[in-house]
Length: 122
Image (cartoon, rainbow, N blue to C red; front, side, top):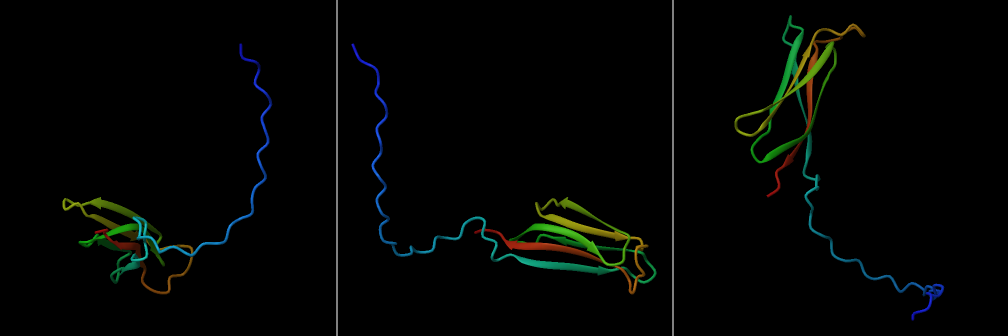
């Protein structure tokens, strides 16, 4: 017949830390390396007498667009449309229209497509 289990024992005290080792070699670049990415802007001005403009960009061969957004200076609104082309490439389209009533335009309105373009991993 086995008796009851006794109380847990006490661990020994922690020893002092050893000396600091040398720095190891740098590891390989991972899949999340964005150091080769570039921020770019595609700008299009509204033609004389018109209140709309459109800025568009299709992914170039060997590159991918990771982030894109639209902006404007004097238009009333801007919208983004993304289209998957039959080639498998994405096309980003910013459409800007109207005239803002929040401030007095000093020039023709512009439509901006801001995007981050990165090389595809090899």
